[in-house]
Amino acid sequence: MNELVSLIVKKTGIPEATAQTIVKLVVDYLKKKLPAAVGPQIDALLSNDGNVKAAENVLGGLLGKKK
Image 1: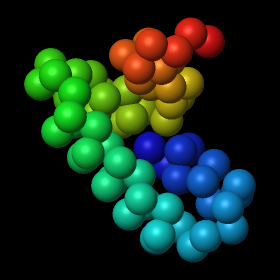
Image 2: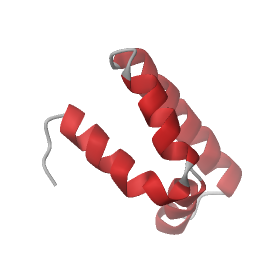
Image 3: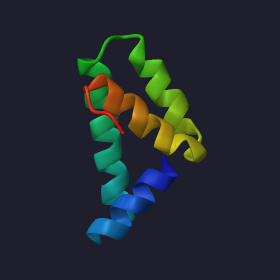
């Protein structure tokens, strides 16, 4: 998740603490709206910063977008 937070900070210039809050808010929202089985997958993907790209692909697939 740190990689995602860093990317948000870099692209927007907002403080890191604010970016962390935003990422947590979005992840929590997605876990509420998506099927229950997806929540643990999101957590697993974001717990390892090397998997941020994989998380983007999973979420994109769930939303019907192809990369």
